[in-house]
Image (cartoon, rainbow, N blue to C red; front, top):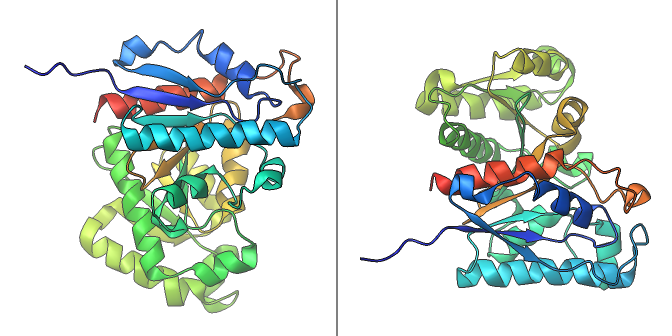
Amino acid sequence: MAIRTAPVIGITIGDPCGIGPEIIAKALTRFKPSKFGVSVRLIGSAEGFTPGKLSRQSATCALAALNESVRLLKSGEIQAVVNAPVNKENLSQVGFKFPGQTEFYAHAFGLKDHEVTMTMQSEKLRVSLVSTHCSLLAAVKLLSPGLIKIHAERTLALLKKIGIKKPRLAVSGLNPHAGEGGMFGDEEIRILRPAISALKKKHGAAIAGPFSADTLFSQAVAGKYDAVLCLYHDQGLIPFKLLAFEEGVNLTLGLPFWRSSPDHGTAADIAGKNLASAESMVSALTLTAKLLADR
């Protein structure tokens, strides 16, 4: 009889001159892998680096950890990955051509950017994004009924995965007051309503919208909806980080493995000062472990 081994979560060091090494160390004093039937594997080392001083060398280390995680995922030596923060500007010095780690993993596994979904998870609010790291102008041009359907269905599947039997997903409007019947833009009429109508035929009451963004998030936080599908990066990230910056998790959907990270950056200004909170890293590890344990 084959012995089933514990799934392994790889933890990449991030930029070793940022707060990554610190929050990983703090998180591993609190996160207990055995509780979830998983184990962890550290990828990368901060040895020899000075906290707070980002450099070409620290970028090289961060990129090497990311590349190693891809190798380990493809070889089956790890089954999920949690990424400590990287500095994208610093990484660009060493040939990193992606707007973020989300897109890096999509490319590494042969997927286009739109084939993965960035979703932010917390107990207070959940948001998924139709577009991620691009200009606002590009985000509007990218909108299509097909793209909205992909990200909506991926989000609904996640909600069921985490135990919400009858998920409720609300779609945000793009324009003020969701366009006010076309007075402030017609994207709701041309793009959003057809997409939502098609989704309703398949999922019924599980999906609703488009709603004016200036009231939608307060309704979601009050419990009317389990998640909000947002149409561009800041529409979702501003309310999310306002409410859940300490404990929020960035989770990528659509990859052939679970990938998550804390919802904050490298914070080089406080690196090495024992000021960084590990809450978001603990949350990322815990969510990833729960998803792995339920596979």
